[in-house]
Image 1 (cartoon, rainbow, N blue to C red):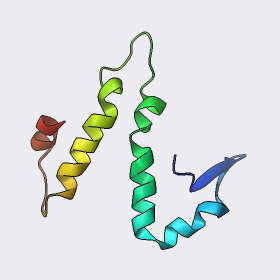
Image 2 (cartoon, rainbow, N blue to C red; image 1 turned 45 degrees about the vertical axis):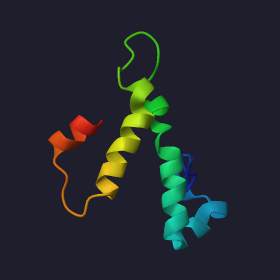
Image 3 (cartoon, rainbow, N blue to C red; image 1 turned 60 degrees about the vertical axis):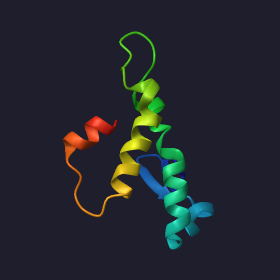
Amino acid sequence: MAQLVRKTGQRLVQVKKNQALLGDPQKLWLALFTEFDKLGEAFLRSGFGESLLRPEFAHGSRAALAALYNTDGAVGIGSLRAIV
C-alpha cells in the first residue's frame, strides 16, 4: 500500500522512487500509517457475507495504534479489544 515494493512475476522488488523512505524513519512511519487504514478494504470484502469489521476498520485500527503508541509498556489484548 505504501509502494515500497511491487510484484514482478513471482518476485517482489523495491520501488526505486520510494527507496528514500527507508532512510527516513519519520517519513516511512507517516507513509505506512497513512495507507494502513485502507487495508480493511483490501482484505475485508464488501457484499454478501461481509465482515462486520470492514466499515469500522480504519477507526478501530487507529484507536488501537494510538493506544499502543501512547503506552510505555505492554498493552493487554483485553484493553485493546475494549478500545477498538
